[in-house]
Length: 122
Image (tube, rainbow, N blue to C red; front, side, top):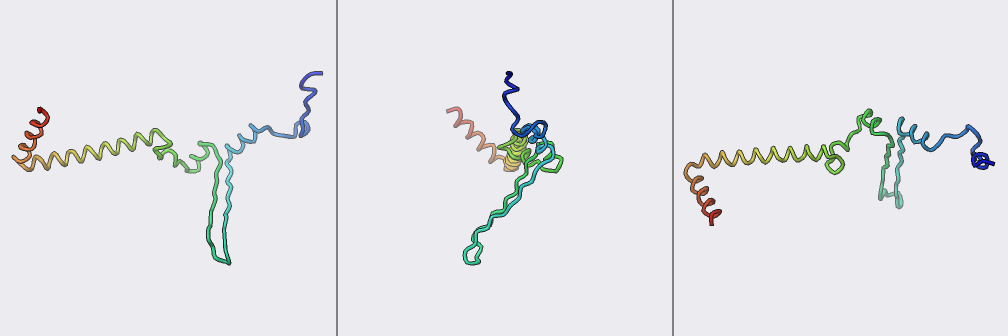
């Protein structure tokens, strides 16, 4: 007797879908699970928790307009690079403003600059 003959399909032949088939359908179509939990004491609402769960593939989520993970620096390296680029631009603008302000001081800025150089040489 072969192994296939000894192991019978517990759900009958041809009647069931494999876990991979079910997962593929769920990710392709998406599933929304929603529920509310309320805790009341003597008709006074103490706590309300609203649960909304969406299970879908990344492509399906993007199709629905959900892409929050692309802008989260902890989840996306692209978002982290964009955040660093924005910070770099902000700092460069601030440096330019400080240099312009220093140039507008006339001689006072040059004296401070010379003093900085003397301290560095020491």
